[in-house]
Length: 84
Image: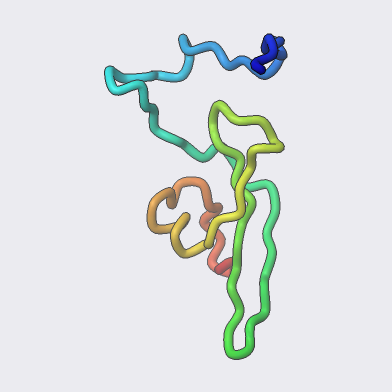
C-alpha cells in the first residue's frame, strides 16, 4: 500500500540557480574546503579534504583525495608552499 508523501519544503532546491542543461544534469563545483585528515595505512599516508559543493548543504560535504582535487580544481587550494 502506498502512502501519501509529504515533502519537506526546506529540502527542495530551486532549479533556477542550478544551471541545468537539456539532459537535466549540472556540473558539481567545489566551494570551499571544510576539513583535512590524514589516514595512516601500513606503508603510506593518505591525505583527504572535506569539500563543500555548490548547491549542497554542509551535511552533503564529501571526503575527497587531495591529489585528485588539486588536479581538477587547483584554484580551491591556497598557494602556500608548505601544504601538500
